[in-house]
Image (cartoon, rainbow, N blue to C red; front, side, top):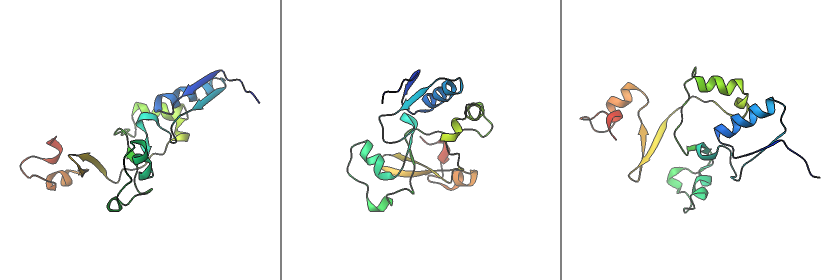
Length: 139
C-alpha cells in the first residue's frame, strides 16, 4: 500500500533528527530513513565494535580489544555541556527520545597506531605520560 508523506528526511545525524522532530511537531507527515545499519550519521557512536570494522571494511577485531558491546566508538568526538544551549534545543524538540545521556567513564583516542587514555582529571593529567610536557598540552 502506497503512503504519502509531506517530507522525507534522509540520514539520522543530529541535524536531521532535529529537523524531523520539528516538522512532525508542526503536523507534517515525515518519513525519516537512513542507509546505514545504525543511527547517527557521521556523528554516530558505533557498537558493537565489530560494526566499526565492517563500516571501514577492515579485518575483524582482535581478542586483545575485547570485541563486543562494551565499546562505543564515536566517529567524531562529542560532548554536550549539561546546561548548554544544544541540550535545551534537544529537550525542547523531544529529540532526546532518541538519545541516551551518560556520564563519561573514560575517553580514549587512537593515535600513531596505539590507543591512549585521555586524562579526565587534573590528577590524571599530572601523572600521565611524559613528565616534562603535561598530557593535555601534547598533540
